[in-house]
Length: 250
Image (cartoon, rainbow, N blue to C red):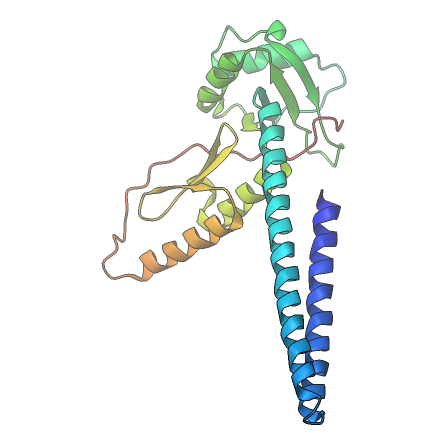
């Protein structure tokens, strides 16, 4: 899909360059043509402009359809991950067992109902680099338990462990970009959706780069405005630091 989108973009740029060059040549020929040839050249110029408009419209429609397909694919991938959480901060150890990981997580979260048989998958993902431990991908059998675990993640404070949602590549990029724009503690996720808190205290859902750019611009205007509240009461929201890895990576 990404290669198809890139090919479409390249084709669009190539069409635009070629048509611009041809139109410039055609316009020059029209200006230098004998008076008897001007009507036919003018007609050809009009036909070309119409053709160019038609091609551009087709490309825009195709681009819109591709974007819709990408969105649908992203939503489906996120639905497939709805029962998954990532566990960060667990040191690498050769004698580590899945049971010990789950029992420690259960104790830190103060959720005794979390047991090894509550998960259908628990394994590290990603390549091992330096001394930084790889995250665990944990897939729960019950979505309600996963929600309860996610709600209890504040109990991990001081344990060295953190939980994050397993975002898709696109959402992970948007989330990391939003944190740079709005601040790390003013961005959070819930059920795969990304949210940010603006300086005015309003919550904004982030679905595209445009949402980030608009929110950042609004924040700048609010900051410069003499009527804005210089010290809004911000409430700390949930925030995560996901590692965007494919489920199949090990």
